[in-house]
Image (cartoon, rainbow, N blue to C red; front, side, top):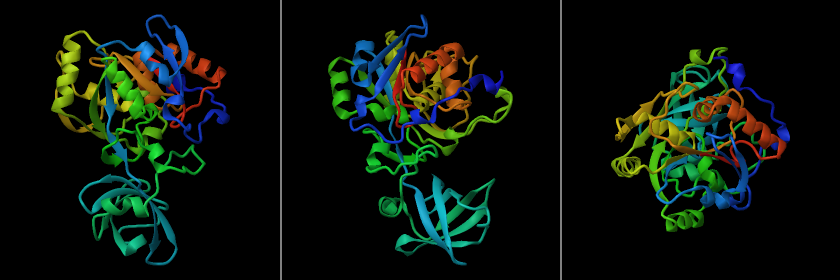
Length: 335
């Protein structure tokens, strides 16, 4: 399978640079994957396409405000992006420049000290801080927006979902950004329930697949957890013949990683599941998702769910109708 088959041209003007004033005011393209029928709607009207007993699975991860600026011990500034916490004081990071090698010391705001203790591939490093930094990140860190967003975010909470709880992501699970607490309450009144999982999103989610052949790509791993409470809700829905609707590709990856005979089982740890066309879904019945970058593993996942031709046709329609794309863009519901 060729990676080029998942390429498309997107006018840059359609890349959303800022979130809408109201989260659920985004547009919603609904596609019936069995018939190929496309319906244009609004996210606030998603209830029209849901049924009593549907279970929406949401990702409660919270984005780390982990873009930090530091001073080198030799002078000059350095940019550091926190990727993953390995312990209370040890983090995997990206540094702005490969010259920052092992043993280099950095000084951060509030006189927090850090030392590069290991050099990984490319610009990745392991840094040891002289104290835990979690509780001060809101004061010294900035929100790490995707590289295609060039405007400053006025309210950092707009890059968090309203149900975010567990700090650990380098990027937001963007399909969840469309939900408001009010919309969720309205859906619950219609007997539509929610289950929570956690998957900490890595920056590799934005990286295009560079191999010519899709099957040659080595997918990145991400930490995920599906706990007993969610397992109970999901398995009950499956046993009753009710739909499990994954909110975002992160929920899809978590659910399919937890797949077991007849439902899901509790998991906690890294997943390296690569979903591309040919994959047989075991848990997910429907999907809420944003519009994804060309040649990305996320676009391949969606193509596995609804068929590549259906995806490309929906994307062509969305471009024709001037939908907003990517993280702050509009949404799709695939039923």
